[in-house]
Length: 390
Ligand code: GLA
Image (cartoon, rainbow, N blue to C red; front, side, top):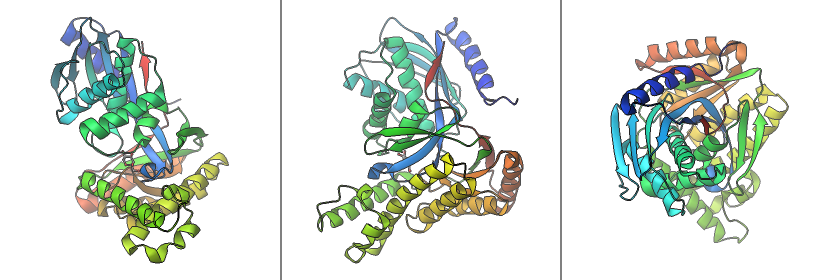
């Protein structure tokens, strides 16, 4: 049986060794939080819609030991730098340290009494590639704070506090999908989230299928500003529709048909943004059905339809992502799409397990040859959410 977590051992060995060097003792535990791929349901989470992400076997690990005071010292093996601060003097820095301060800020603002700790952090989720390295870091940090401070680990509450850290402290206006799935993921399952009620449902990921991630190696240009612009366009659609009816609180309340009735009242771009969100919600629900019945062909078709909608109506794809999707489909994938916010980052493909390795190498060889970029491919498996290894 192949090891389903082939990277975990090497990451853990490295942080344990570094912890010993840095602090001359063994850690009390290792906290872990996963990155994610989103199978379908893109740009729906800030419209009270549905999403279907899956936590993956790549993430962030933090070896830690509690302190008796309120200082935090943390060494990052990825950045080869250390940081330290007092929980009484948090600071709105940029870079990875900002997430650590931000989580401390969000927990303390929610009234949670925190204790300091020493730690070593390392990850194997590519940074800034659209696989939620930041949500994984936030949840891993929250897990350490909960462990050393004796807090009850409430995954949904913690995910919401980490989202708040990112929104308010780091200044990225993301929805709640990434933090929720990093907190709640489950091995062999995707997680369907109703972002209006926060009701979640685990959907078994068919064992005969695999997800291959393709990293485009193309920068996520304008990601933050374009993301905020799309959010504003969705809000504008809702405002204009609300001027005509009191029945619509968010785009979640519309079906493709009911949206069409408002078409002539909306500027074309705004209509298209809304059409993506409304049709995407329907695709998520159809995909959940397809997964439950093991209908991989239909699931693949919904994924491809999602990509086209993101490319044409929502306009958040890129030439690199379109190329990866086209190459994956040519190479026999059942479906493929960009994953995450778009504007660069990663695409994913759905294929049969036996086909995963060949698909990964064929697509990336063609992509790198045609673009001169250094794309990468890896098959991923659904994994558990944030936890502690004692
Ligand atoms: C980013 C955000 C999520 C979500 C996706 C798009 O990953 O963090 O909240 O909005 O983009 O679906």
